[in-house]
Length: 160
Image 1: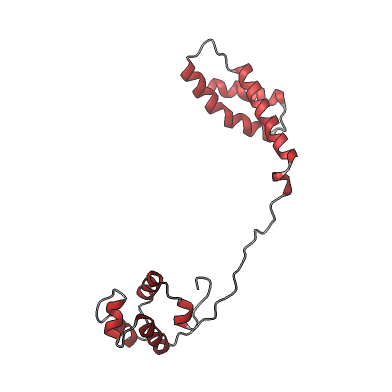
Image 2: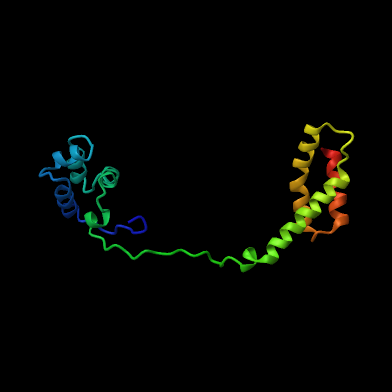
C-alpha cells in the first residue's frame, strides 16, 4: 500500500468495507470504533473525503489490509537493487590483505613518529587515537607511500 497511489477512492464503498471490518452499522459507531470523535467520519464524508489518518492508524492496530478497504490489488513484492552492484573486491582476499597492509603501515609509522618517553600513557593513547584516522586516509590516498604518510604523521603531530 505504501508504494501505491490512490487515484479515485469510492468513499461509499470504502465506508461500507470499514463498517464491515469494524463490525458496526453507522458512521458514528465507526468513528468511535476507530478512536475518532463521534462526528469525525460523517463530517469527512460530507466534505467528500475520509479521515485517512484515523483509518490508517486504526487499520494498522487491528491488522486490517488497506488494500482491501480501498479496493487495490496488492502488488507483488518488489525487490530493490542498488544502481551498481556491490563490487566483488570488497569480499575478496585481496581487499582483506590491503586493509591489513594499511593497518600495519599506520602502526609502524605511529611507532616511529610518536615518541613514548616524553608523554604520559593517557596522552600517548589520545595522540595515537587522533592520529590513526588521518594516517589511514593518507595511506589510502597516497597508495601506502611510506615517506608521504610519515611526513603527514610528523606534520600532524605538531598540531596535536
